[in-house]
Image (tube, rainbow, N blue to C red; front, side, top):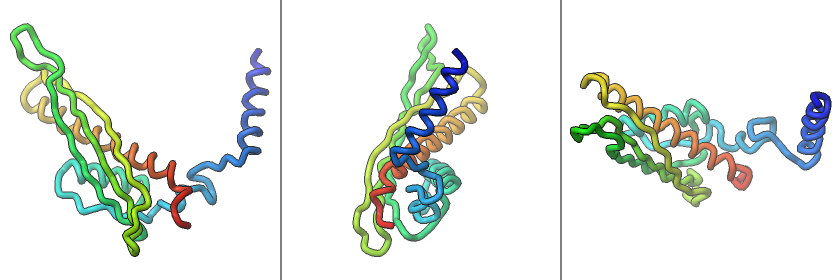
Length: 160
C-alpha cells in the first residue's frame, strides 16, 4: 500500500512537469514580473500601513506598476451574555485594487477580495483594545495575501 502511494506521488510529479506547469516563484515564473515592481499608495491609516507592510514584505517595492487601493472594514457584535453584553466581535474587511502601468496608466488588473477575523472582549479594557488591534492587523495580512494571490494568478497576462 505504501509503495503504491509513493509511485502515485512520483508519477503525479512527472505528469505536472510534462503539462507545462511552472512554479509561480520559480525561474521564469510569473511572479518575477511583479516582484519589486509595484508601488502602493502611501498609507493614511494604521490598517493601510499593516496592509502595505505585509504586501511589501512578500512582493518588494518598485515603480513599474502603480496600485490604487481601497481598504474598508466593519465591526459587528457576534456573541453576547444573558445580560446583553457583547463578548465577541467579528471584523469584516474588503480590499479593492486596480493595478496600472506606471507610464501609460493602462489598467492591467483589478479585483476585490474579502475576509473576516474576530476577537474576544471578555478580558480587561486593555486586553480588549489589544485584541481588537491584533484582529485588525490579522485582517490586513489576510487581505494583502489574497490580493497578492489574485495578482499572481493573472501575472502571466501582464507585459513582460
